[in-house]
Length: 249
Ligand SMILES: [Zn+2]
Figure 1 (cartoon, rainbow, N blue to C red):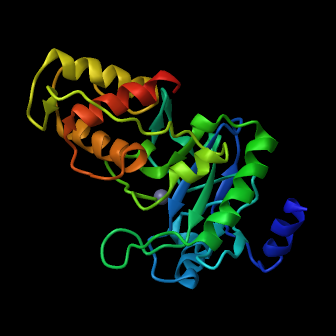
Figure 2: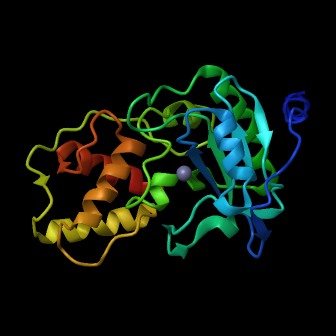
């Protein structure tokens, strides 16, 4: 019933993107993006343009129409330079889903229920088909924190997790008050926090420096797991959340 519904939506589609290559790895991840374009047709034009060198497997409009852009058996070009859990360049091991949304800056908006409902059906199908771990359903910002913000803090990971389609432990009341680290700080505890972030999957250098890359990783972590405030600072709440998320990562 559910699969049929997706197929029906796909039939809207005509031409697929030319931007793909032969897949050389097993599908292990799902990467969620926003298009960052002001319209669906703008996004479709980019994906259909050979010169753009970008694509994805699926695009979901804000009205909940699903477009097939590249067949899942091929590698689509959506992740770019990326890293997760010691794996580099995730295009070959992932499926890329683009959500129609103008993105950060003027007009960044909530993802409508219609769009997310279709995403949920699609995720269910892909997760089942390729036996993907829910910890491997990721944001583009997770795997490229120095370049990407998408899908961003307005994307509701909690909703997906409640349907067992993503990893998002329920936020607890945190009490640690003595932790505060920011860009430029140096402390052995920062080194330990980096190890926990590495356990989750993020790329971190192995030292005790709070460098610019760590700030971007913390921002990506906040966008993903603690979206109430994005400031790239490790306070007691962020620290506790990192420990909590790393437990079952
Ligand atoms: Zn993206």
